[in-house]
Length: 249
Image 1 (cartoon, rainbow, N blue to C red):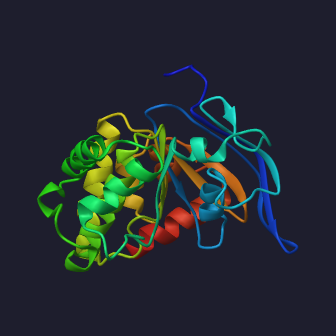
Image 2 (image 1 turned 60 degrees about the vertical axis):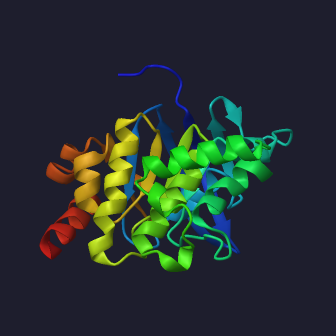
């Protein structure tokens, strides 16, 4: 058990849109090397919470600390912090006019100011990690959805962030392509990458997560090891959600 300070700490996080409250006081701690899966029904605030972690969504109240830096503080360099937090979205968001290699190199050159040679070396290493190096010269339109998402993951890890956020990374994929993306995520975890993953892939959460967080109605209802959340949930809402999932599979 790592007793060091968490790499990502969310304290009292609230978010409202025009009077509609989406998050109602979220507290969550993620330690280095952990894979945390966040599950729950649609509309429970999971993606909003994730997007608050790098201020793609502006929290209404609360504190978010990344590696000791309060990202809500007025003097915090948000661009510098965002380089520590990789993000993989439901949609792949690749530039269609750039090759696979060009997509992964872009932020390395533009944001981190690496030389072309260094950016290319890092991009190739990241593509190799996700099994996409042989497609380096291809364009996004020539790839399957699963391949595009693996390039999206490579783009995130190439920046060598301290934490990777995944927002339903398989939800836009055909079922037969989901496995290849989840396999890459398992490999990243084995390599020590810290990951916070919003997912509806319950089998993945059960098999791969260190901890599972169940959200509903803008709050964390229950969190614990996968065997507890799926095998012996303590809260009625968790029980109902897990039972519904079990009935569908």
